[in-house]
Length: 155
Image (cartoon, rainbow, N blue to C red; front, side, top):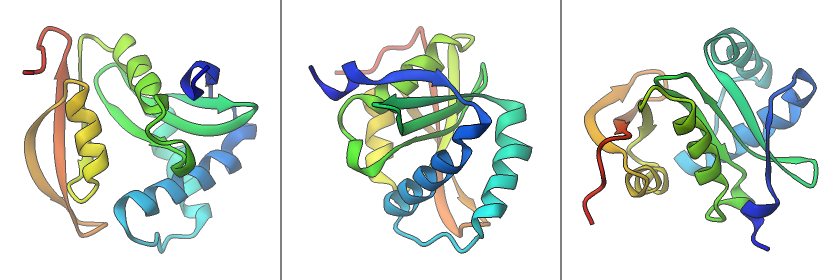
């Protein structure tokens, strides 16, 4: 049985916050290649103030431990991270499929251009780059992606 078949996608509950935040930060830093200078409490406040109220949040659990999470609305994916030790095992796909299944038939998201693994991941799953910009807080180029249920990826 592969790892993704053992993963359970569950609703986020507050008691999972510490574990989720640590996994999120480590995965972000690895993917983007920077050290987050913000205190963990600032990230927690952002998560509670901006992410939770505007999105449904799901965690990917493997043997009771968080190995990924996604925060998505019916129109966008605000966050999608997989623990560094569990990437390329189908967990991100499970989380993205969850987001697609609850969408209105299309989704948009941003990722950093330097996160080439994420860019490739989204492109292989039908997302198209539609805009490039610059994220001022992180001082990094970003890419806006869009997906529509009615549009197929070219082979």
